Length: 242
Image (cartoon, rainbow, N blue to C red; front, side, top):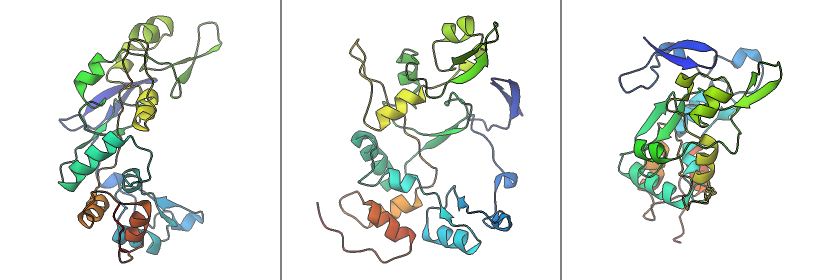
């Protein structure tokens, strides 16, 4: 058992040797587990295949959450370079996705696709000055005078610790997801010193559907319509060359 520091103290977390959270049968939610509650629900986590979708719906779910397969489709807003490189990796079965328990300032495990030139690269992370100028993931805290302040463990360490009373251990490994995810969407901030904010690509661990769609298309890409037809188990339509 290893321990991770959090805003509220120290929380136990089971990690493997690479630092990824360890999941077991206690983390598996059967598709029919929520059926008796009587509210709509959708299953997520490696459900983006026709078989898994059919299983979820048959068990009572209204559908599935399918993110990765649509994040890599032709219409998605992911920066073209990131998308192309991830598609190339997926086509050859070489995608590496790391569940990082430290990357997100919120402390929530964040899946990171390992791509050079992004914040998944430790050297890129080390070279980037710590800046928090968007503040989307800041958390509230009580100041000594009783008023409410905001801080982020991805901001400069001295600011977080000395000015805002945070614990230095909370800052270790934190990525500025606000700036990085905007860069992944093709909207990076350009700094006065000439540097551009690096992206960070998040993706699920299951690329089964992506590989299936790429295998049937010589263009090395697919559309959102192709993804929907695949998930619904329809025969692929004749794709038009672009």
